[in-house]
Length: 109
Image (cartoon, rainbow, N blue to C red; front, side, top):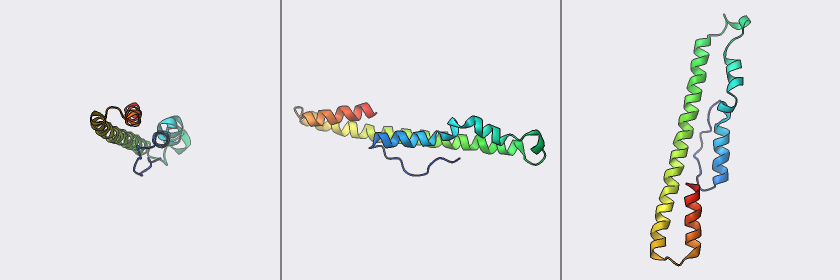
């Protein structure tokens, strides 16, 4: 159960949340994954439990690393937008639309 490999879009927060939900699938289904990974008594000799557990662990670590990278990337992107908006706000302090956009981006971070 690999994580989606597309680039994350941080602009649409709902889309970003959906991407994270999809990426959490392996965590949400961990009981099922463990039940299908660890062989029953009838399959003990046919399946290498150690190897399948290592593969499951690696899948979990890959998913966690991927999510962490995407989250940190979006935080950095949105922080840059906030910084730019703050600089613009300092130049034109009476622009209410700019203030609204700045607050929206700050909330996103």
